[in-house]
Structures are given as structure tokens and as C-alpha cells.
Image (cartoon, protein in one colour):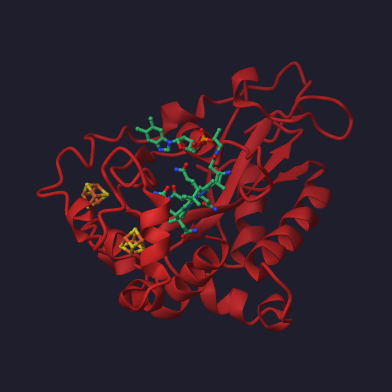
Length: 243
Ligand code: B12
Ligand code: SF4
Ligand code: SF4
């Protein structure tokens, strides 16, 4: 049963085609900055996308067509900062850095994601087809109570999540992601960025550039959520443009 704050956030996010990807009660090791009033955050809410469901909504925004750089990051920032102001908290972004906020560690604190052989986090239902757009660090606890209210109860969020039964990659037959890259950029333990980037900039890289990473596309988990061609090409162009 979602808490009142969870319901309000879900409603606000769904109007932007974004998903609430989980939440957690931060501890010092999570490395959260303090809020504007100098107090620590009482809860962190992870926001992201699953598949390409958000794509038409983002594409219809002014950010997509204004010709300025980083339209998706600017779209995310506009939404997050409005929500942070509305809820009295702080918006944190995966792309601000280096140093970067540890979004993948935060993901593991708030959802049933696991490290995959591609190093990206894999989710039992969403596979590799999900990403984070921002996090909201709020002064209210997970159940919506004020952080300093004596009666406030913080449910141990992880305890309410289903336990991932298996290591998805360890039980994956043939681990096709490790075979599919034409230049072997995924070794299972590392991502060889130079090998990937030089392939993308060559004539042979057209398939990856236009349809998305072949290794990621080879993953059998959640094939129905694979990014659309246009969405995948958008990310590949952004990646290739920086490397
Ligand atoms: C720098 C960066 C890169 C670099 C280097 C990535 C790396 N693995 O070192 C490059 C340019 C290569 C890159 C490429 C891509 N990235 Co990138 N990247 C980031 C970024 C901005 C910072 C990572 C970081 O240094 N964090 C700081 C450390 C302290 O945080 P952390 O949570 O502890 O993360 C580290 C550990 O979790 C560790 N790790 C991850 N998995 C595993 C597994 C094991 C076994 C171990 C030991 C460690 C480990 O690696 C992380 C980096 O060191 C993150 C966003 C973010 N803020 O996290 C996105 C992020 C990781 N990237 C993402 C994506 C999608 C990609 C690409 C597919 C390109 C794209 N945009 O479509 C490729 C895939 C490459 C790959 N296999 O990693 C997503 C992953 C989503 C997911 N499903 O997990 C993120 C979270 C961005 C987002 N908005 O959601 N990326
Ligand atoms: S984008 Fe293409 S070259 Fe780069 S890792 Fe994926 S399959 Fe390999
Ligand atoms: S193809 Fe198999 S090994 Fe690779 S990420 Fe997907 S589940 Fe994991």
C-alpha cells in the first residue's frame, strides 16, 4: 500500500511519463548532501524511465526541439527542480559530475536491481531497459511523517520488496550480451569504452548507432521493453558525440 507521499509523487511523475523507481532512508554511507536548511534528508526517491514509454512525452516538449545541447538532461532538470521546490527538498542528478552521485548504489538500496554482466543494473521485470533521470532528497520520512516527529515510523523499505530469487546473469543461458558486441567491448568485468567508441565512429558501427547497442539488445530479459529505434539512436548519438 503506497504511503501518502508516495501516492503524491507517483501522480506528479506520471503526468510527465516518469516512474517512481523506489525509495530509501539514507544513512551516512549513502553520501547524500544536506538539504538547504542544513538538515540531512529523511528519504530519497529515485525517478527514472522504463522502456520508451516516456519518449513521446519528452519528444513533445520544447527541450527536444530548441536546438540547445543535452535536451533530455535539461528536461529532467526542469521537472525535478519544480518537484523539489514543491516538496521542500533537493533534486540530485545522475549526470552532474564528476564526481557523480552513486545512482547505481542508490538504485540497489531502493529496488530489486542487480549488477549485470554489462555492469548496468538489471531488473527482473525491466531487464536492462531502464535508467535514472533524477533523485529527490526530501525532509519527510518514507511514510510522509515529518523527519523530527517522535511518532514517525520509517518502514524498512527493502523488507517490503520481493527478494530477487536468483542472480539473473549467472543463470542466463549463453550470456548472449558478452557475445554480441562486434568488437568485444563487454568482457563481463569491464566495458572497453575506446573499442566501443571507435566502432561507433566507423562505417561498421551503423547498426549500433541507428538501432542501439547490439550487446544490450541481445539480452533476453524483458525484450518487450527494448528502446524504440528513435529513442535508442538518440542515446547512441549522445554517447558517440562525447567519446
Ligand atoms: C560515468 C558513467 C559512464 C561511463 C563509465 C561507466 C562505468 N561503468 O564506469 C561511460 C561513459 C563508459 C558510461 C557508459 C554507459 N552508461 Co553510464 N554512467 C556513468 C555515470 C554518469 C556515473 C557512474 C559513476 O562513476 N558513478 C559514481 C560511483 C561512485 O557510483 P556507483 O553507484 O557506486 O556506481 C559504480 C558502481 O556501481 C560500479 N558498478 C556498477 N556495476 C557494477 C558491478 C560490479 C560487479 C562492480 C564490482 C561494480 C559495479 O560502477 C559504477 C561506476 O564506477 C552514471 C550515472 C551515475 N551518477 O551513477 C551513468 C549510468 C551508470 N550509465 C548508464 C547507461 C545507461 C550507460 C550506457 C548504456 C550509455 C547510455 N547512456 O545509454 C553506457 C553503458 C556502459 C557500461 N556498461 O557501463 C545508466 C545505467 C542505468 C542502469 N540500468 O543501470 C546510468 C546509471 C545513468 C542513468 N541516467 O541511469 N557511463
Ligand atoms: S554499442 Fe556496439 S560497439 Fe558499443 S558496446 Fe554496444 S555492441 Fe559494442
Ligand atoms: S544477456 Fe544474460 S548475462 Fe547478459 S545482461 Fe542479460 S541476463 Fe545478464
